[in-house]
Image (cartoon, rainbow, N blue to C red; front, side, top):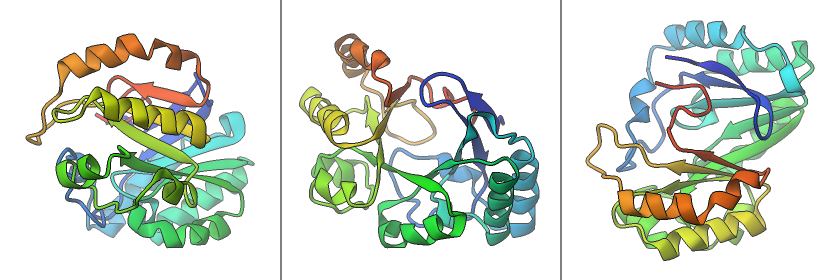
Length: 229
């Protein structure tokens, strides 16, 4: 599995895919990424240290992802990230977090002491689809609740049961109200959730212009950032 890459397109940065402890929620209907988690702390740290040793400070921006939230990374891994940041004079750090950790984000900002951009996988701002179909357990009411805590939003497009109206509304919200956005085209995996090929074809045709929007990144495959398997 590839765990380090340099993203040369929009928002140029280094990215690392680390291992973490089990996801605090771990019940999203579409997600099998949690299979990458572990409870063996020594093995997690050993792998993560190897991955982090690749970081060289290119573009002075680093994104750290794992199959869950940054709060599920071991303390020794977090210390290693901070060491790498200091060594390479990194100025900006992207981290991911589940909604349930929203009141703890300041802990990470204080720990790292640099600009931290928090990403959240809302998948959709349609409350029914997000929580009843995708089972995200992210019980906010509107985008305004999310914006209080997070600067970057990840959307999921192309799942059976999703509508064009939902997608249009979601993209409009990200374009007008958030600093960054990532749109993930759903890739079928070991879960029972299925792709909506017609919706995906419509999205690709309708939203070609997003390719020219600097703050929006589109992942047509879940490995398009150069990490994962």
